[in-house]
Image (cartoon, rainbow, N blue to C red; front, side):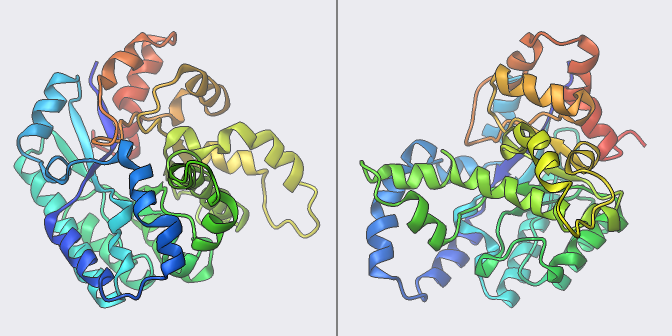
Length: 343
């Protein structure tokens, strides 16, 4: 069974250096460092990845794919702790371009093994839209991955971000909404004070918090009327939809009777039509079963979240109690259709 995985991350030495050099110039809040400094890093030790593994494209990664039944990876810049959008706008634009050039060059070297999603300077929406157009039309990247909440804790449904979504719709490419760090206010109010303190880190990020935030992004975009304006726009949401599929009926029940609701359809209509869901390496049958029940097999695509999650991505899918036809859709058919790979 051919297998294409869609959330597979790289990082680069030049991006780490540029962002870390900039962060050294930003004054640190001592109380913030006490709550989310060393203990934060220690709390995430289970998710730490050797930078050499993240930046390797030509050797270890290809061997890993061969050993674990992966025919193609869609590469993206996925290090939320060093998001290029942390930088001032001019630096963020230049760094995003350099990252996208790096991904495109990897695809050129291994066209039968890799595809790519662009990274964008989201805090400058017009520049982000321009870079998305360059990445797709000149570099042949297949969409973009957005690392969660924009700078200054802005959600993506703010009108200023509309140029990004308009460009994605115009180009007919998907945007992958990836988790990122919840704001300081959320971290302080929801996740501090746990014992041991390392729970602060794990619960505000991969244990709970960043999934809730990423799911909230997608829900807010639906509620903003985005898909009535851009009905062909497609989003991808990882980690089995970041909680949203489990609440579709509740969302419909709660939002449909709201006075002044501008939506033409219930929330679930847009979610099932415009959103594609991946496991992001959460290879768990109960969650997959619910997502398949809510979404249907046509809107599920595969993802491992390499190198944060490793193991045989093919075995879990092949062992699931679903039809061979649906397995083929999820393994490669749906993403090939979404990205128009067979045209």
